[in-house]
Length: 325
Ligand SMILES: Nc1ncnc2c1ncn2[C@@H]1O[C@H](COP(=O)(O)OP(=O)(O)OP(=O)(O)O)[C@@H](O)[C@H]1O
Ligand SMILES: N[C@@H](CCO)C(=O)O
Image (spheres, rainbow, N blue to C red):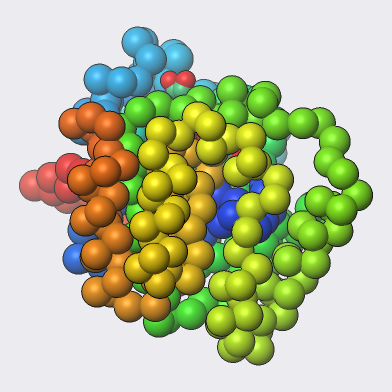
């Protein structure tokens, strides 16, 4: 059994128009990492160590960490398949802020399952792992949704099928789009942000949701990117959630004045994103967000693109030091 390291990128859930069914991975254009890391090594008994910028914000005690729950879930799945496991030592580098809208728990969950699957010689295929990841994400947010774990694991922009397999469909990417993202520094519970949503929507809202999604998927496949951007509007969650986000309306207004192609809430927030047609435009909007949307010292902005690559599992060498945020 070789020591491994799994890096799982941040992600944008919903991507505005696709509540619970669209998600996209994020990669800062400066080449830095933005995501959690899980290291796995052999051990006499199971342990979890947490380090990293946001480790102090995690629940106290390893048993309360979602990574520990992933380990036990994985071992139970292995046992059901008549496969043996051995104790491991996990180290979670908690580089994503909790309750950020960047798929923080998803990043921990995906990094944990990817590390475990790699360590035990890949007993589970991609769809099986995605179902495990969705299950653990559901334990945290109150209901299963794949729009963070799927792009985090697979990379790119993914559409959830609702089928047992394939769990997702990968959508074409536009290499000319840049995403200015900004985490404001406050924490918004995904479960709470889901609880404030209505349990039913008007027929007109349902028709708009479906129309936009259909047009978006067609436009990406046809390379009609202005058409794709024109339907990136959140008619399901934003009307209810933006009240949780101080400065949201001003941030949207500035981004639109700057010519952003679209603007919305990343996942359940408070992170916001602006879709930009150039890196320079994204940098200008990121600077505004730094100065006006960030609420405290935990906040940060980045200019990102959507990477083709998702989670990366690589050999862990003794002198490796995980990149902090
Ligand atoms: N490794 C972990 N990473 C993140 N949250 C964790 C982890 N382990 C346990 N938790 C708990 O799970 C809950 C996660 O909250 P929530 O789903 O609202 O946000 P998130 O997943 O951290 O961020 P995001 O809004 O980016 O999805 C928090 O109560 C947190 O304390
Ligand atoms: N689709 C989820 C994403 C959470 O990151 C929600 O909006 O609640």
